[in-house]
Length: 205
Image (cartoon, rainbow, N blue to C red; front, side):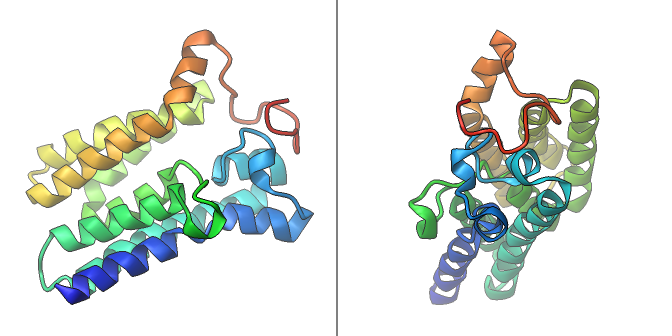
């Protein structure tokens, strides 16, 4: 249906607005993808620009996912697959932004933003577990992957509509795929810890 198609396209274009890249250009006239981990997301913003910009980037990236899912609910005529598709489109936009040569972030904040609309309580529980893991290990990547694994399990356990469960399966798989390099680094003991590294360090240094 036309309204659903429009909603999905708008959600992708919204997701493609990379606030991490824009913030780095505005504050330091740099491409954040050339510094730190090379990732255009809140965690690398923290490494390169500091706490304030990182928090703002996280909230804006989170909002992209929520707004995308809400657009789907508003234009989906009650079909559950539409907010799922719109949330996934916003995540895809963040990961592969059309405005920035399709090189974006890993989409965790945008993913959580979409999933709190799909299913608030299971997303909250998964998020709290992920935060606890990050607090204990200082590995944001590990917490993000655990979040991705827990989401479909909890969505199924809470007996949500199948569209939301399968949406959670997709975002969980996507989180693991986007963190495949981090998995190797974790296994090798070379993964960056939260707060580690020098602020503004060039990518790959």
